[in-house]
Image (cartoon, rainbow, N blue to C red; front, side, top):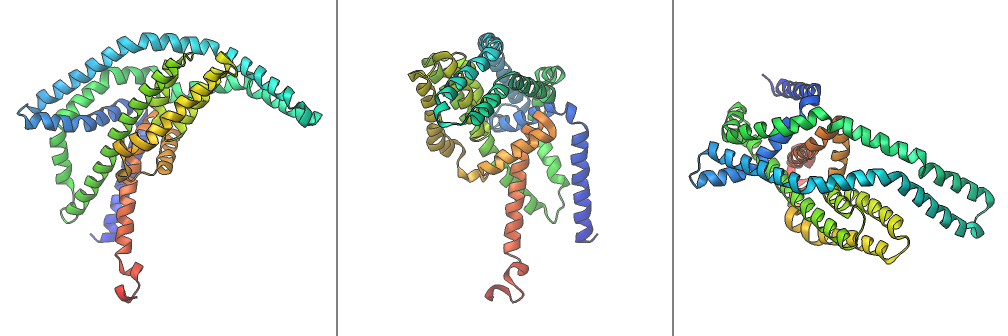
Length: 357
């Protein structure tokens, strides 16, 4: 088989694999999460193996410990979070009305500098943004998120199927890697292994580091907003940390929600500046200490590329797409750098006369 035909068959195989994933995307979520957990916990299982613990027992201990941590977190946090979330949802219409009233007050202060037509246009815009249209938009957004990835079936799958998938994959991880390695074409196996190792370095460095950053930021924001005595500070802080895996965007969402709640709760008082200070301090800590130390530039995933990948993955496959976005971005980034390196080393790049040109 010629090189061109091998490329064609490889591309066709990749396309068929992607099409198959797309066809079963509705039931893919627990398997993606289980694979991700097995990938994250594999170094721990390897460390226990080196200490003489059988692989099956290492997988059992890790799975049991993880389930115990999740159960404790649910028992401790869910009642408090549930109460705050329900209270927040009940107050959302009132928040919109109060914010609209404050915006109208600011508009009255601007009357002296605006024409009557401008005042009427701004008043209509404020009424539509902070009124029923805004509530309808919030409802559609929440409904889309629920239908896209956290539906009841998927929630049950995450609770009951994901632990089993993670356990079996973690137990058999080394064997699965060995089988996949045997499938590699012998002539190109060293190159493929090198690229897979590069993907592993990028992916593990980014995912493990970013998860730690999100956890630290969530705790920091929750404590800081709690000290300011902001309503729903625990929910807003933890949620902001959770969505901080989207660079900049996550913090901006949390900042906007926090400032909005602070304006309704305190008015134009010093507490609003304190809430803004909490978010600015969190960004400073993340940008200067957490991300450089825990993630670092070595992962090679530019924030813009990460944001695009997350948005594209979410648009294509909902919550499952969000989970697959960063791994796909890491693979594409590594393969792109490899292709560029091969291009730079080629005669076509240097010219027909070779290195001397």
